[in-house]
View 1 (cartoon, rainbow over the protein chains, first blue to last red):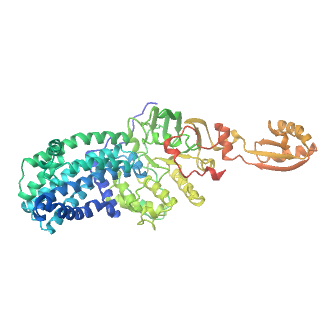
View 2 (view 1 turned 135 degrees about the vertical axis):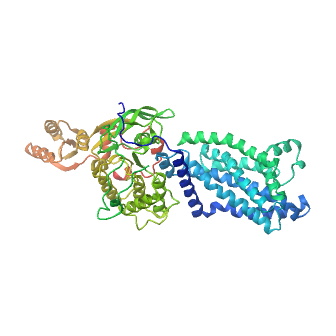
Length: 267
Length: 359
């Protein structure tokens, strides 16, 4: 059958402004979910408090002689670690979401195909923000006085949020291709731990064997942490920040198209 | 994106009645026109060349056992699953080439309530109204109207997890009707509901049609198709095996069976002869001294019994049985209503298979 000229004036595609407003509506939905399931925020609330105290008191003496001189090293390191953990949750929750009936309805709505993916990613910026602010606050309570001042710390937090968003694309991809939330969690932790521990987050990389040091120095997480240290401790916006942003951009360039392609195939 | 709403909808004496659909295309194309639809899952053909033509303003029922491919057909027409073969048009718009346009003309309510568990009823309606491009005031007003219309006002601010199955289904349908789409897809709208809630859902579906919507519904229940659908297509193993009105389908499989238990096995032959003459056929169970006689109508049983008395046949017992759902399926598909081999993945896992209890 051939189509006769439709007399109805319906749009054949989603406009950019509609897509943005749909993304923000779905971000609102994600924040409501966070509010209703407070335990989903444990990884960015309890964990920073617990880990900061734990790591500082356990490793402080051994690595830096005393706790207070370790704090400028460990606080940025822990921000990196906490934000990475929060990224893992981004992927796992996306998988859980996609397995629910409500996602079927998203598929059949005349909305931008990308909005159900972009919405939660926007909302998760709040999680990265909570994680980095709380870690700084805990450090401050333990006696950490960042030399970079308010401006430096603000810059460091901003970088942490940007890094969180960029790193989240890795785990978002896992979330899309994974078969179950547990599976996504499993593979994500397998990637998260090396990214965290094979970096300069807790110890200087020059104590590592050569091959490991090479990996740790190339690890984008290391650059993010170094940049956070420079910004928070010295208020210095330098080469490390550039490398960190470059690393983030590279991750996005690889994992965003991968994610979008697989996601569109499933929508 | 949407035209402004009139004030009439926000309440008043007509709050219970639905409002006519918007966006009704003025072309004369049928609501749905599908040719040789195919869906392949791995090496299994879940849908194998189904043709459907759904007229505007009718309720079209797709009837079939679990796993027959009903949901898969619906999902392809509703742009939720890619079409592997054939063509489908909704109001003249190609489903494959213009999915965004088609999505603006349809509402879908699935087997599993597709609402957000983390939100309240009001928040769900608000979420989807905003996603559908309604302004804040429109979204609020329309949500209120629908909550009232679907008897959900009291539960409006409760979390969905506290909802009964019927309430979830009603909310789900309310969400599908936010923009008053001219075509509504209902995938097994009453599976798993108790009889009272089921009746309410039927009433709601009838109101939709009165107001000018076209409805495509899938169901496993013959009585549901009978109650609601103007025309029915029977699907089995991914193929359409019959189509017609409920009456046409029923008469094609015979309405009732008269079962006569005889006192004397010698009367078997004469009983069979009478049955042959009056209804054209009879099934004998000589060892049980029993004869099964298919009837065109239940009234015919009297004529057969009178004829038996006139010939002096002595009867031990008599029963008249209506055809069960299984028999209808059996007659049309050659097997019973248990899940067939061609399971569409989305139907096979349905835990609310009530067929067991309706038999």
